[in-house]
Image 1 (cartoon, one colour):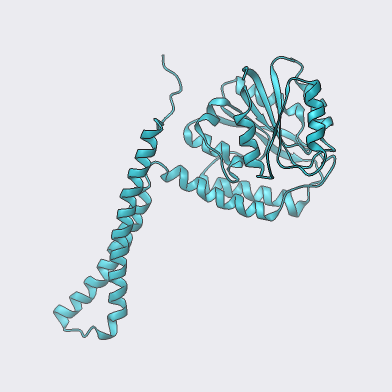
Image 2 (tube, rainbow, N blue to C red):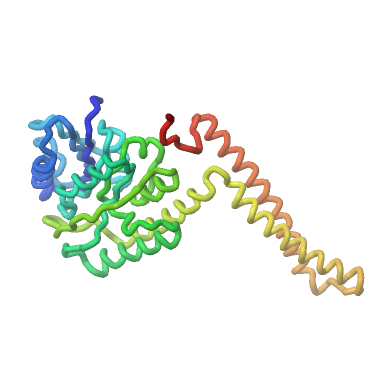
Length: 316
């Protein structure tokens, strides 16, 4: 692929009423015809979205279409776009016209100032978003993100953001994790910031947002927290669980052994507790073993991929 300056990646799912207008607005905002490309990812649309995209692409070489076999979800669509784009700066945005293409330039400006990831902060929502269905869950999600991860970003889960190619070369997205790219980038040591963006009223169609997505996103948030803390040293968590379990079982049985030896206590009525102590000791040993094995697997994976656990900013 011939390198370009900017790749704008837009997942599409049944957006035939918005595609043409969105395409026109992006072209108005990015006037340098040789510096960018627009990558539309058709995520299994059932309407005329793909045919409309083909007509646009036939007239504009800057437009690329990636058509997925089925509806795999926004994160997979974004990943497909990233894999098939050529830009050194990558911008992602939604296709429902709520993201304003005019906000692309402030995002890119921050990238050019030296940041690796720039999030679009939905500071003032002027759209007709349902207060209960979208606005409140989104705000709660960002509060939860800040509590769990310690991030100071006001809005790290929005779909409009810009990032450098180096970021996505070092972070693999799956599930609903695309929304947590800024958090993973922070964990890796990349410079992350945010700029306020305009949220507009949805022009056509209906939202694909639902509560199952919120639930999946929460589970992915827990995965992110676990990944950020233990991905390179899984023994830390297995070892902790193993030691706690082993010591608990040991103390239980030590207590009953002490009572038996020094006070002649009859242990028949305490047999369930003694069995519990033995089980906890065995579980502790198992957890410690799992930890050692997981650490070896992690080490082998990093070594075989020649993947470092650090990133170099610059060498002078």
